[in-house]
Image (cartoon, rainbow, N blue to C red; front, side):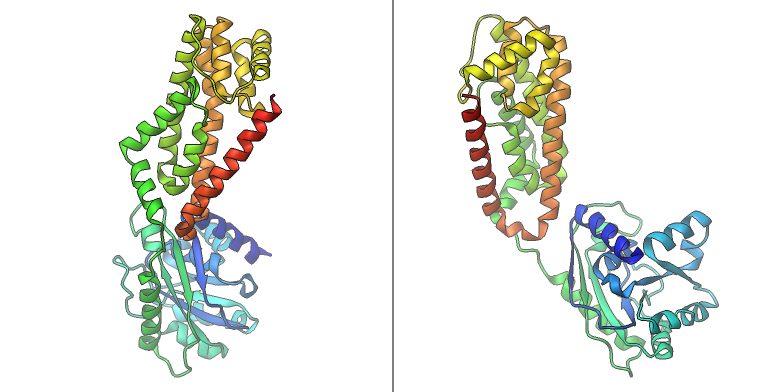
Length: 383
């Protein structure tokens, strides 16, 4: 159960930071896994990718991960780590895991002994092979790619797809150099694989991540708060999924435009002017008017949930002479919660679907169809 929970935890974490992909499977029974090591995220990648039935245990540097009680607890509980001394006594620590291997567990070791700085696979120590021979289990090479971009050595966390490729067990006569060659070949092959992408998604992402993208989000939301019938959430659904890292900026820009547009709509309605409001109904206006009469500016809190467009509330608030300051405070809370939540939710969806980016045009078609159907249902329901 602990292995299942650890795998679920790290799969969720890596999914949110760009995704994790595995190819190949471990053989039945116990085995020693040897992998390249360029990032602390390598451990998370292996725990997320390896079968929980093997209950993988990770060999960790005793002088680093077990140097303090809190770090030791984190390593043991979240990574199933066991200490391996790097300066004297390391072989004894490894051989103590022979019984676990015979019981069917997978023992994961990074034979380089430390993280590489440039992604290259360094020389291997022989401890993993000695442990496998002692326990009578195979040595399985694994190549990991993407972790050095996700969490570089001495760098910051950023989004990246992580790939784990499990190779065939090594022959019994293999030595450290043969193990290193097998791992390096898997690493290079995995690292060379390109993520298939859509040209349309790349163009949308380039525009959305630019200043022009922020301006478009702001103007779209501004126009919708006045008259435009298409909600800014439709735009956010398209662009935030295409470039998740820009989701917060785009959502804030859309929120600013929406609030500015609603203030203008409030002033125009208060002066007796009414911009066109397509796809709205008299019943929507009556409902907003009634709520504003009872709750004043706080009535806009119903808007994210009842389907009445934001511009209807803004215009009716102007006719009801709701003070601009009260309206701005109330609408910022109501509109902000919806806009930011939608933008970040589509960003998370974009991360989850990262490996299927080549299907982005189909995603846009589904998004447009769903939005059209939903809008039609809302308008007909308020007639």
